[in-house]
Image 1 (tube, rainbow, N blue to C red):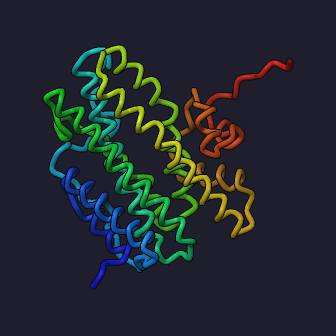
Image 2 (tube, one colour; image 1 turned 30 degrees about the vertical axis):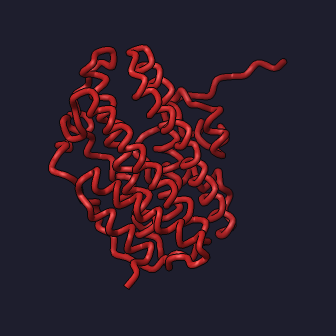
Length: 277
């Protein structure tokens, strides 16, 4: 029997090895879009996703405060930075398949699934691009400890689709838009052209992922007759266990459908004043 999309998502979530997980993710994405193009879409179906995705034995997962800090100015520090990015990308693969599997019983347009399958496919590509960079530096994903708290947002929002959209793409992935330009500068100064190219691809495509979150969040607000800004603030304050930290990449956030009045009120600082002309 042909797998449904939700079953494909669950299979990815239950695959432990990073390279195997992302290869499977990309195959399933290809199958989904090939069927859509042929006019014979795969049924969404339902699944029973695990509370936590399968993970390899390495990296060792540590509380955030216990993950060693390394200066990015050194070769070891740049390896640590790439390792952290690989860990984020692997979690993003699971997060995007999880939103499909976990909320497949919610009636949604097929475009919702198109967007998140595409996002999962791109995150899979990102993971492999960064792993290739680590390989060139005689390292690999799993060589260093990693952040154990990456899945907390998924656990906290396991029964709240709007909360998931608010916290994962619209807060966590939006943070990537803020910090990635600085990472690109670090690797450009180090002369690592491959890492610069990989991070530039990630930077361009993450804008779309944040935009998917904003689009479907606004869609659900319309369905439930909610003010999107008020709902966003309430959900982030409920599920996100920190404040948002500037500086913000306001240009890319706007491109992704996040205006400043969504995120500045959740910040630990006040927005900069603009002078009247």
